[in-house]
Image (tube, rainbow, N blue to C red; front, side, top):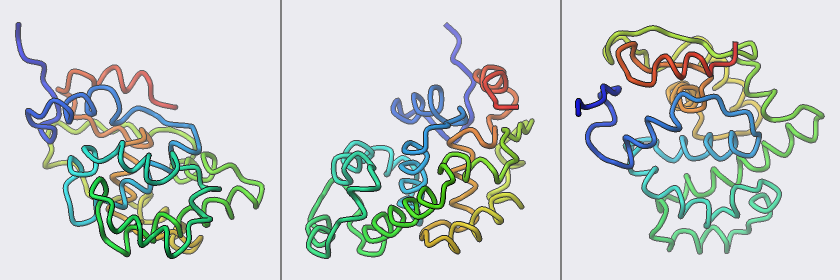
Length: 194
């Protein structure tokens, strides 16, 4: 049986390949899922995504399934307790950032705009479908991720630089950056919100 051609970044790791095949680049519209993914992408700053992917379940357990209403109530003691949780990245700034982001998320929702609409506005409500032939062509940020980063920072989010925002946009299908030879390219293009 011939091996499937994938985007080279996922290598031979089974978890990474499964994430690539089933999750990455597929549009996400659920506000809570978008919030969770934005927080998790922020956690990878300075690390590889596979590190966070392996800890994803621990993050969901540690952060109340990413229910912003619960996270926003976390106290200094809760954050201190998280510093001892081996299942997540034990970095004080990153731990506190998820609490900060939960408060910012709730403020957006309280303003009358659903978080999913807020997030998707940065690409005009539809997926940007790229057709790159190799990894070298794919940028690490874009004008849209720069605009998103500025807006999120202004709204009170942290760990949302333009590169993190671009990785997030790729992950949640706001941008389709599967390379054209990838076995899921056509499928994800068909799924793109246009």
